[in-house]
Image (cartoon, rainbow, N blue to C red; front, side, top):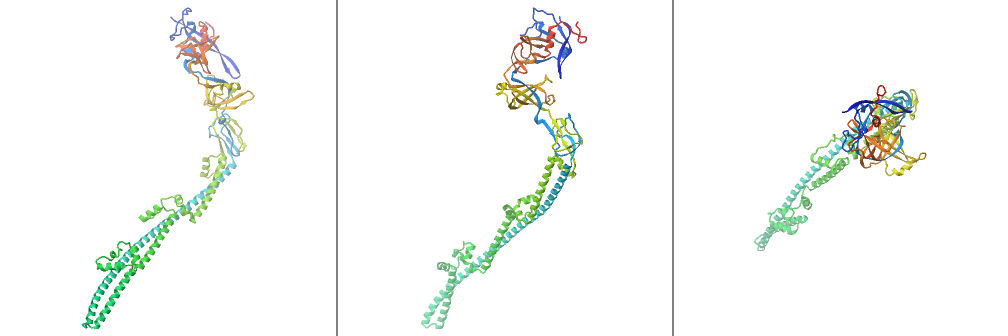
Length: 627
């Protein structure tokens, strides 16, 4: 049966403070179960099979005792033992997180909002400055803005008037083109009608000539037969000489008529063969078919027999007028195209007769799309002059704006001054970055120039850990460390905290005094525990290594030539001798003595050793004497 005893253990714990070491006595109360000790027999205390220890190597603690000594454990686990190199160094401010505050404009300090030690945010107003130079620059800004606005207004009015002229001119050119097309179409109809009339007249004249030809031929044949018969009768004195003479005269007349008709046909280019065909046809076939002109177009027919038409002259006049109208259409078309009207628009205009107004186009689009017409317009010269003046005004305005930006005003500040029209001599110096004010060089009433330093601001959310690698170490690590290599940082102020970062720069120069090479690692420092100027032990990770069974370095206790750990089994802690291998700055390989998954003591090991050395001694926590 177990007997419980109460033991109070007095421990001396060293505490590091600035200026030296002070020994403080803390009293811890330990309570454990006192068991019968049998040195000749080993007992197990809930251990896994494979570990047997005597009661002399075990200690059992209550929960209160664990809390009092701050006992902590960690797991025996498979971890990679890294190849590392340990160097010394210090914490320093990140060069990209330091800010110097200057006013950027001269003036008198009227009010200070932040002082040394305070932590403004980026954009916070640090101080108020009265600057007459800044006020004059704002007045210059307002004058330039007013001039620019006036020119913009004038240009808008002029371009709008000019746009109306463009629309009117474009509509006029469409109307001219449409009217010339209409005239051309009317003349085309006139020419067509006159050609049809001339063709009818030609056909009629040819038919009349054929009638005369056939009539003259028939009459001549009849008179020839009659004349022969009368000659016979006259010779026989049956018919009178007078009748013969009359018939001879009629015959001669008929012969002349036939000759005249033949001559007219010959003038028209009709051959004797065609005349014989006409005479044989006896008027049964249309004359144009007999002349082989039925399939000829009107142009050729008029060219061959135009002299037969009484309207041939008026037809020529109509054709001349049509050709002139066609030239006019072409000219109006070219004028429309020169003004920027498209072929498609003109085709639509010809089909529909609807004139486009261009009211849906903005002034800018109208001028841009019909630049060909605009360039040829005298009115455009005024627009160009105003645009040139506006460009110069914009340059002046932008110059003043940039001047104010250089003086420290933001674009929003400048726009507000233009909108309100109110210049101000007050200038608000803002923090260029978040951080703590480490230096202040100004007081209320101070006159400052634009290049004077007002404050220094330091942001330590991220710091640099600068390390020093000795020259004789470079040969061992130069092929393994590089930009991006992991670095672990330890500082005396927080011994239990490990800060990690990555190397961001390695110096190419060896420091001649100490024969070391500097490197820098960026460390995130959100709690601002790391402060520039602190000394820091740094561990550079060169290689991740292989996975082995390992425990934290803090768990290992050296006693003479042996190493051991305390393994926790519930409330009981047993001493285990171990065989170790490789180690880094955090873990050490264990080759024998513990099993995976067991938990070893990493804090409170010395208190356990004291308790194990004197298991029967009881020290009262309140009275400080033994019982």
